Image (cartoon, rainbow, N blue to C red; front, side, top):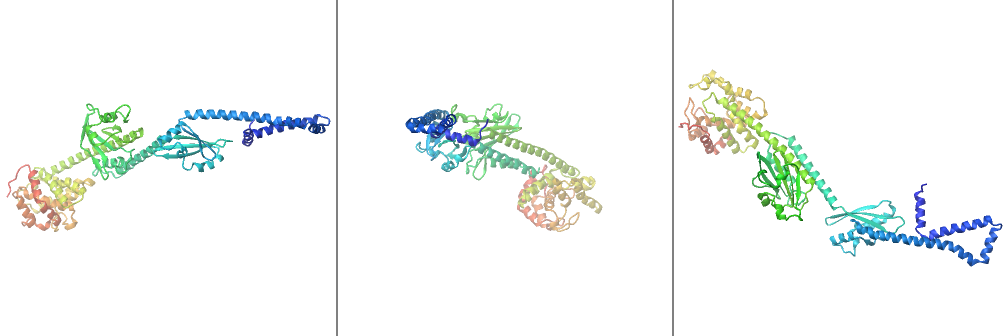
Length: 579
């Protein structure tokens, strides 16, 4: 048989008050006695009334006894129950690691256990004011507590300690029981997890942006490393202990050797330390512990001194990373990382974050490595092609090296964009690649060329464009090959372009090609000295006129003419006789 909540509440209320319970028992006993008298006696009512009249005291005693005896028994039982509850309450809280308090209906603290006392002392709260450890609005919370069947939960923070309190008013009781537990570690872990997720999201977004705008020509590994570390390292201007104060980023440069730099954040920039070499086979430093997987460790004050803990780090690390209380390390492929922390207890999530960083760094390192291989192959190919174009000419091949350096020098003097400077530095050498299609007898003819032979020579510009094709990497080389014989005054070939119609790269190569040709001995002319070549370019000689050059390019040449002479001297295999 089940009872309804309302019936249970009524029963608990009656039995919780001895007077009500005794009145109920007394009424039932006397009611049954009166009913039996009325039913069984011939003249029951008269008998009952006569009994009250002849012996009123005896009748009153008999009636009251039925009230007093149940009342006394229930009162004594209730006192015994309260005494037992008191004994349990006195014993249990002292064994409870949580904070336990008992409040009166008015909110006054009637009792608190030893754990609460310890926290009061830790937080410097007077033991005479234990209510200060409760949430500031706890009195407001108590007003609604009697209406709730479930405990009311509230959290408060004192200094760096978070305590979660559960308050409950037991049915039929005018007191409130409060249990509190220290959730500081849980809240710290939640904050750390949130920060870790944010940093992982940062890494993911960074990698996504990097891949979205990836360009082999613009890929700068050092830039990307610094970009990541700037966001993950602790900024001294805004202390965040959960972030590492320094990170040692290394890469394998020999089968058994790693070298790298220590990085840390300064208020306005990322600081990079000197190069550090570590051989894991012979040097037992902390970074070697991450070679087999993610590893983390904290200084244990009970087992070693802080000075002893520092000894496992490379001397350069100890010099620049300040005091280290914990670290995490991981190796991914050819990349090894170790992060150093101060005033932070390193947890698993810190090591997992470092692992993610190491994987991203390793991926970027692999991309950079493949870029270098592709770049080396690319430069080798265009260098071989450029040399092939010179095979039937009179030069040893140094001519194309010099043109690259001349062109870079003038582009820098003109303060052009770095991408333009980089491209012209390898594209200038492709200017005469179309000569592969011109017969050697024409190229090496000692006398004056016929009109037909000169027309054949002019075709090397179109051949050059055809050879170089439509590759975006060779777009500048193609425009140089086609237009480096166009003159600023419109008297060049193959299309007679004039002024700004000629690509800037071709205008630069036009001047440096003429300068280098003047400096070399040809079948139709002697080699000129630097001063004579300078005079011809600036004043003309009938064959070469100053207005065939872009004035801006000519000004840059004059500003750096001595360096042009130095390049020729440095990159000439044989010293030509000069006049």
